[in-house]
Amino acid sequence: MNYRVFLTSLPCLLLAASCAQSSAPEAQANLCTSLAEFKTSLATLKSVGPSSTVEDLKQAQAGVRQTWDSIQSDFQDLEVARIEDLSQAYKNLDKAISAVPNQATLSEGASAIQDEVTAVSAAQDQLYSGLQCP
Picture: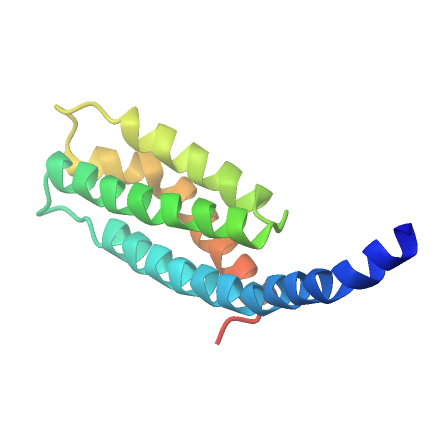
């Protein structure tokens, strides 16, 4: 009797497995898109310069944070555990930007976060190439 139940349910199991496999490429494509958007938001952050304000820096931080949230969501969809380096670099960057006082000059703010921006960019590039994104 159990053998019949198994044979009867086998087509459903195979169908479910094939659906799960077909969504993995889509999830990876979404992640690649989010990583590209993250890189763009980092470029915006890097462009903050002497003529910018600390408010410009905070707005750039918000853009990085928004694209970071998309990456985390995409990683959950993909169920991949290759995000640790990027995750730690992002946390360090977010913490460094948040620590810049509003009365600081932009030059001081940019100097305070330069190492963190570089680390996030390097971790993002490594992850992007590791996923073989187009």
